[in-house]
Length: 208
Image 1 (cartoon, rainbow, N blue to C red):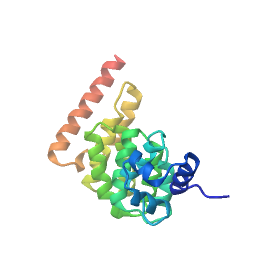
Image 2 (cartoon, rainbow, N blue to C red):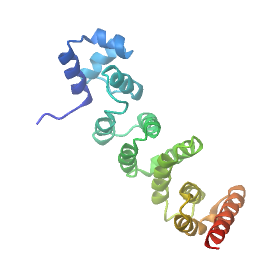
Image 3 (cartoon, one colour):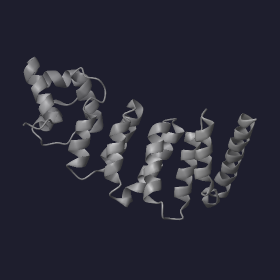
């Protein structure tokens, strides 16, 4: 059975629609030479090019992200210059399964953890909390036996993200986080203690 690839899908699309590479280049805003090299397997596909090609084919955003994971991260050595933009686009499009796959690959190398943490922090600030939580959990898992401030900050962020209307879930999140408070720096520690106090206060009020 022929393996599905992005370049094969693109080549089939051009053939099926009787579209030349130059014509598709005008539609997709991707250089015709680049498209030719992609189809011939001479050039890896950059994130922006993938999005433009997908749009040019009239497909939904992110339609080829699963294939992109296979081609760029599973069957070749992951490159952070490709990983970072991909994670960002997945977070924007809520492609959490793709993020999970990529993070699983990155867990094989601890050298990615600082960059993964920084990306999680960016996502957290941007309000992409589900995506951020997945990255924080991965970093925390990789450092669970270390007495590190980064581990504590991951746990603090996960605690903050977990808080919601479910008081039982809030209690579980608070209990899980409590043991990491003392590992935070002074400013974060004060904020964390305040957040914990507010959480427990809300729990008491809820029970009353």
